Image (tube, rainbow, N blue to C red):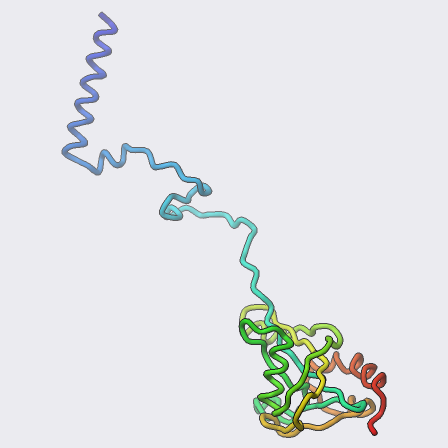
Length: 203
């Protein structure tokens, strides 16, 4: 008798739940447990649950370093230096010709392109001179790391012209420290001086 009474109560409860579901679909949705998710707690199939704070997982995408390449074009114990025209704050200071690598370019390819655009010459990129120099101001503007890399370059054809600079000049080893270089180029003067001495004096 006791079991029969329990069966009747269970049957009545199921009928009552069916009536509620038929008249109020939202109530049925609320009574249905959410689907299982393979993601972390608080993330459902459609994304994060509103109001749920997700702790960082200790991972973030790595942003590729932008390489600004400079050309150390060496000839007869001299290296080519270029005098900046722009921006106004840097006008008159000296640098190694070059510029930013474009997407899909290697530093060597960028060097060849920049020398053609800035100097009207064809060069062949050789080995790296010194270590990369960080460019913190540029990195802050573009929100990713940036470095200046100096590559030795061989002049293949053409005579260097100041197409985008105020002037260009050949500089001997003992003249390197006399120029007003941009700060990022100064760390290269030591290893570059040794390179120039190894290639002898001009004819």
